[in-house]
Length: 474
Image: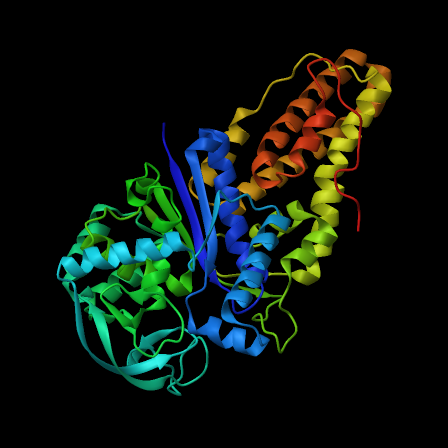
C-alpha cells in the first residue's frame, strides 16, 4: 500500500503561534486529511513540532524571567494545544530538546563526519541573529541590512566545524534533474537551481559561543548549529527514521523564506550521510493582512484561536487557505472575513443543507426519493486539485458546487412544484440529495468538523435526519 509522510517546519518558541503558522499547518493538515481518506489513516504520517535549540530561546526565556527548561515546557504546550484547538490532527509532535532528537542528530553528524565531510576551521562573516545564519554581502539590502529583519548583521569570527557543502554542487544538480517535482512551485525550483549553479560554499555547522543547544559528539565545547540540528527532526520524529517505509514519500511543506535550508543544505546532508533524500519540498508564499504586513506595532497579528473561537475551526480553515493560491503570495482580508462567513458558509452551504432537509420533511415526511444521478466529475476535479496541492482550487470547486445546488433549488422552486407535480419534485429532491452527498464527501477534507453533522442531516438510506443550523450567522 502506498504511504505518505507530510511535515510542517518546526516552529520557533520565542513567541506564541499566529495566523501565519496556522496557515502552513492547516494547509498541511488538509492535504493529510485527503490522503488519509484515500489511503487509510495508518498509511499517512503527519509530523509537526517546535524548534527549541536556538539563541532565540535563550533570549525569550531571559525576557520571561524563567529558566530555559521551564520556559520551553510552557511554550511547547501552548504550540501543541493551539494546533489541537484549531482542529489539526498530527500523528506526532516533535520537540528538538527531546532525547530521541539528540540521538538522531549525533547519529547523522557522526555518519557525515566519518565520511570525511566535516572539518574544523575558522569562519569570519556577517551573522544575522534573527535568521540565525551567516549572510553574503550580495544577500543584504541597499542599506547593508538583512532584508527580512531590517537590521545590519554583526561581524563574527569563530572557530567552527564545517560541512563540505561545496562538494555536493554537482550531486544536487543531478538530483533536481532526475526529480523535476523535487521542489515546487516551479518558480522556487528555478531560484534554487540558480543559487546552486552560482557556486556553493562550505557552511559552518557549529557554534562555540552558543549558550544552549546540542553539543557535538566529537567536541563538547561546540553546539550544533540550529539549522543543522532542526532539519534532522524530519527523521527523529519519524518512527524508524530513514528506515521507515514512510521516509521515501516525505513531503516537507514550508514557507518560502527557508527554501535554501531545505532544498540545498538538507538534501546535501542526507547524501553525505548515505540516506536517500525525501520526495518533495513545497514552499508556500507569504500573505498580508488587509494589504499590510503582519506586525505587532501595527496591531494586526491575528490569533488563530480567537478567530476559530468566534467563527469555528472549519471557517478558519477554508477562509484562510482559500484566500489565495497555495504556493503564491496573497492577502487575507480580516475585514471581509465576516462577510465570507455569512455568505459562503452560513448563507451558502449551511442554508442549502437546512432548506433541503426541511423541505423533504415537510413535503415527503422525511422519506428519501429514489437516488438521483451522481455527478462524479465534480468529485474527480476536487480530488485532482488536492493531489496537485491546489488547495484554493479545491475550495473553490466546493463552493461553486454549493452555488449550483442553490441555483437548482431556486430555479425549480421545488416547494411550489411539489404541490403541482409530486413525481417531478421527487426527481429534483433526489438530485439535490446527491449534490449534498457529494458536498458532504468533499467536506470531510476541507470542513472536517462540519462533515459529520452534514452526514447526520442526510440520515440513512430511507430517511433524512433532523435539520440543524450548520453555521450560525454572525
